[in-house]
Image (cartoon, rainbow, N blue to C red; front, side, top):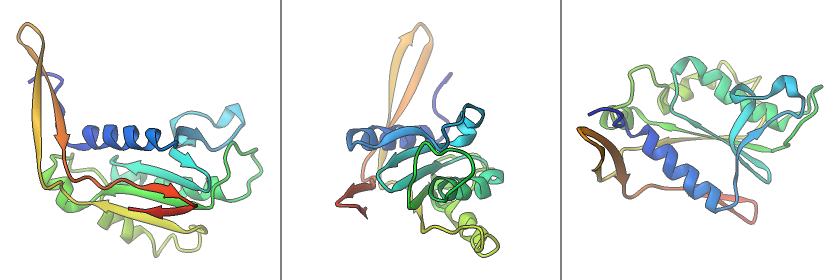
Length: 172
């Protein structure tokens, strides 16, 4: 099946994006104002008030960087800031979701993020919440015929927890 999702990551990203945007979160928020520090490397997936969020279904080699981005958004810096947060949230897959959801073997997981915390303890100077998503209880695949002999899949999940902020608190 051409162009069909190979894992649940794209669907989870779409669900999170849809729900965060509907709750007033700013997506792809730049950390810095300086044009030299723009683009994917220097942005947060979502930001609202005092909270910065990274949705991290990417390669394990960027775990340390994903942990540092909320710190950069929260700490004073010599580069002019575009946003100033106080708390970081990392949303990632657990090993169980990685297996059940068809994720690439190189994807960093919740368990691996926890391993990075002790050596980075002195560098991670802001409160961080690391959320490991478990596999959904159920999902189904909807196939759509878009052209002759070409099908595109969409994964629809149920029972997904979403983060929201009310009164400067984080709740799941």
